[in-house]
Length: 186
Ligand SMILES: NC(=O)C1=CN([C@@H]2O[C@H](COP(=O)(O)OP(=O)(O)OC[C@H]3O[C@@H](n4cnc5c(N)ncnc54)[C@H](O)[C@@H]3O)[C@@H](O)[C@H]2O)C=CC1
Ligand SMILES: CCCCCC(=O)/C=C/C=C\C=C\C=C\[C@@H](O)[C@@H](O)CCCC(=O)O
Image (cartoon, rainbow, N blue to C red; front, top):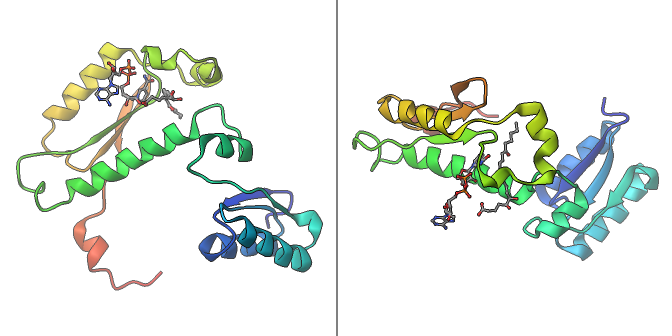
C-alpha cells in the first residue's frame, strides 16, 4: 500500500513512533527512524533491519527541539520551529477558550492564521517560492478582517484562516460534551 513511499518518523526509537514505523514497514514503505536517544535508536534500527531488510530502514539521530538538527533531517523552505510554534498558539488559544473562566465571561478568544502579510517578516529569499504561489495579504485588509472577528460575538474558540483571496472560520473547537462524555472507543 505504501510501496515507493518514504516515511521519516521522529521519536521512533520506542513507543507510538516505533509502532508506526513498524506498521509502515509492514505496509511497504521505507522508513527513516529518528530519535534523540541515540543508543535506543540504534537498537530499534538493528531490530528492524533484521526484520525488514537494510534497504528499507535508515536512521538519523535528531533532537526535534534543535532547529539545525531538524533542518538536517528534513529540510524545509519555511522555518519548522516557527511553524510548530504557531500551531502551539492555535492549541493554546482554543483550549483556553473552553476554560470555565472564559466561557460565559464576556471574554472571547479566537486565533487568526494569515498566510503571508506585507511586513518585513516576509523579506526572506526562502519564502519567495511560497509567496509567488500564495500571494500576499495587505496589512490594511488583514486589519479589516480582525475587526470583523472582534465584532462577532459567536466566535469564541474559533480559528480564522486568512489568505489574499478569502477568509473563513475553520476547525471549531469540539463541544465539551464531545470531549468528556463520549463513550465511543477509538
Ligand atoms: N507577516 C506575516 O506574513 C505573518 C505574520 N504572522 C505573525 O503575526 C505576528 C506579527 O507579525 P508582523 O507584524 O509581520 O511582524 P513585525 O516584525 O512587522 O512586527 C512585530 C512587532 O512585534 C514586536 N515584538 C516582537 N517580539 C515581541 C515580544 N516578545 N513582546 C512584545 N512585542 C514583540 C516587534 O518589536 C515588532 O514591533 C507575528 O507573531 C508573526 O509571526 C503570522 C502569519 C503571517
Ligand atoms: C499555506 C502555507 C501558508 C504559510 C504561511 C506562513 O507560514 C507565513 C509565514 C510568514 C512569516 C514567517 C516568518 C518566519 C520567520 C522565522 O524564520 C523567524 O525568523 C521568526 C522569528 C521571529 C519571531 O520571534 O517570531
